Every structure is written in C-alpha cells, then in structure tokens.
Image (tube, rainbow, N blue to C red; front, side, top):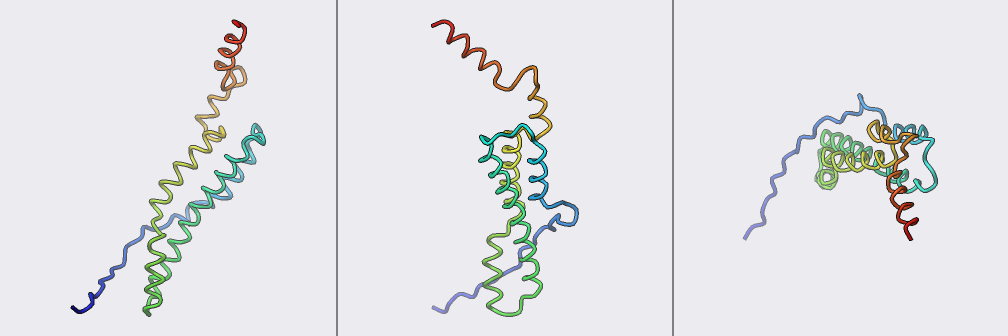
Length: 140
C-alpha cells in the first residue's frame, strides 16, 4: 500500500490586535502598582496576574510568528516548523481562557471597578463573617 499524501491547508488566523492594544504585561504592572491595599499575602495572586498577562502576550507573539512563517514558506523544513507553531497559535482560545482567569485574579485583588465598589471603608470585606465569628466566640 503506498504511503498517504498529506493535504495541508493554511488555517486563517484572525488579525492580532497588537496595533490597538497596549502590552498587557505593562498594563497589569501599572494596575497592580496602583493598588495600595495589596499586602504580602497577595503576592501569589499578583504573580499569577503577571503570568496570565504574559501568557496572553505570548499567544499573540506566536500568532505573529505563525503569520510570518506562513508568508515565507518555501521548504519542507519550514512546513514542519509551521505545523508545530500552528498547534500553539490559537489566540482566541488562549486569550479567552487566560483572559477569564486574569479577570478573576484582578477581581480577587480588588483591581476591577465592581470589586472596588464592594471594598468600602465603612463595611470592610469579610465584616459580616467577622461579626458572626465574634458572636459565636462570645457565646462560649
């Protein structure tokens, strides 16, 4: 039986929003720097936010590499590199997944408008829980 011939077709990639969007790594850094309420206990969440932003930027960079390779393809070696890179280049998937995680981390750090609304000085977050614990402790 003769070997099968592979029929490879180029997968269109949606344009990356690099021209319109600032570097997310820098935006997260500026946002975190502007959160005076963070404590050392938040270091892991801050590091996670930085890593998620890095992942999103890496996905965009890979997509740009893929597009450049696709334009320059002329040899079988390049085709193999292109296939390998193609598997890593689903920007929409990476941004969708990592973006949701990044938003969750920023919300947990009170780095979103909605979460800051909940962080009022008169009613600190966890105030009701502290009340219940105090009441339970006084009953003993």
